[in-house]
Length: 92
Image (cartoon, rainbow, N blue to C red; front, side):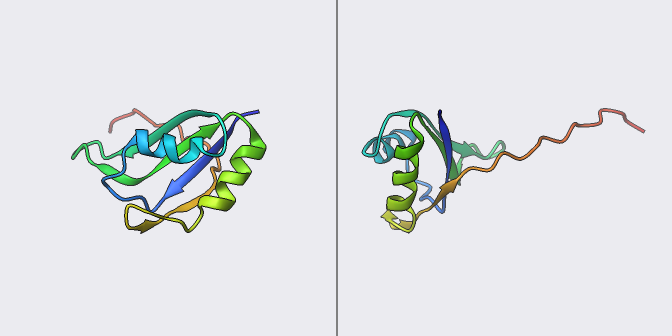
């Protein structure tokens, strides 16, 4: 079963391709996304990687958490799904 991983404290220069390659060392990567600011269109410094195998994801988390990448120590852990709040479109 696929496992989603949070990757924080990333350099603003890190690309999705670099993120993909970094995690591909540990197993099959299904997706790698860097979150962008809507207004400035610049990276926010964090992203998510989805890996096919849970054991590979666990290995990647333990090996990459705290590792220096592009001059920043990554924070890597399992992503926790937050329930989305429904927006109220009523205007007063």
